[in-house]
Length: 260
Image (tube, rainbow, N blue to C red; front, side):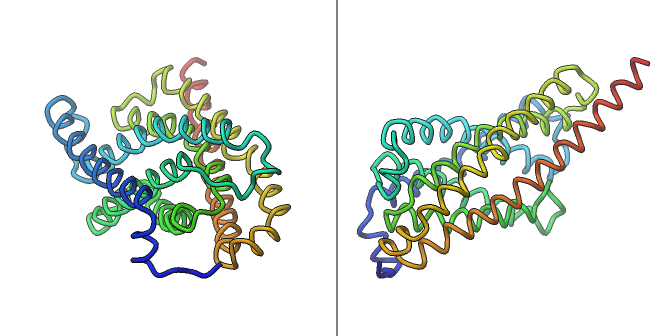
């Protein structure tokens, strides 16, 4: 498949272009709205400018996950009942879902890069790598109309983000000694393991068995990005899971010492 110029891709894909733009603007507006509301109601928790920026980005991250997870899961269920038979199939719903995430990733990346010179947000480097690689892979999928199932499987893993963000919110609100914090940590670890670790071998299997057909029908760029996205996503998710387990273990030990 010949790689088209960027302007041609955008012109020939009005649905993807419009959805991406709407998502980008919506993400910025959500951050601004969160900033206004947090200044009014949660000021004591976010006096620090860096924390305030991260708070707003995590609000947007949570909303993105709550929207994208059901859309991705529905698209996989409805349009890809037999993955092996429809691996190269694309749909309007898949295009919208993927384009929404591209817009979110690009807008969130702007906030992360803006916050960078002022200090260190949580896991800034990992977030930057994740957003750049995801945006490139997703852009090819949405605008070159290929590999939707690969991308949608990754988007299903966004279901763990609300729990990850809830943990950060509670830490910022000085609630790390509460039972709800410990319960959220345990549930977060379980959901992350199921969605991002257990699903990974299946993603590797799907990419491996369909790599040749992807290469022949969609070209080297699409096939190569599928492998790169798989590798980068796998490395980041396993590293993040290590940090989650480490943090949960520390929280459990701390709780046990208090009850002893």
